[in-house]
Length: 159
Image (cartoon, rainbow, N blue to C red):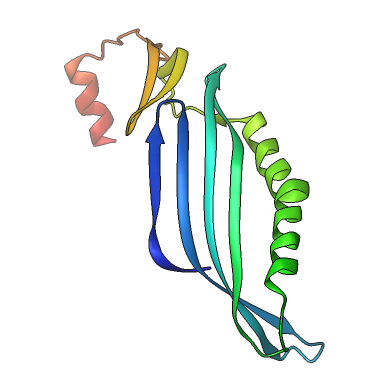
């Protein structure tokens, strides 16, 4: 998709929304590997996401997914906009939302380092704000300091 306007993210209490619009060009590849232009669709999408956090994983679920389409140019004749919209709506319900929600159910891990971990985390969506609440646990691999005499340091460098 080639954007015609910058995408807009909107954060409200309890919901994260994204709006985007642009042109989608469909091209067919023949068996001789030549490319042939078919048609261009103007698409305007709006998606809302519920976010949650459990076991240091961020989970998400799409809802209110809408993609409005209109054919703007065609090399293969007239394409019925209502039929195309029906196909897009069906793809959203049967394929797109279930596939993305499956990933959201598995979740994405909170970023962490070897020594610093998030515990008892939560996420809140406020007006224009994503608030992540967490306790931090600092657990260094080793807290033992090892004494190396000064003369041994020089010997190690000379070797």
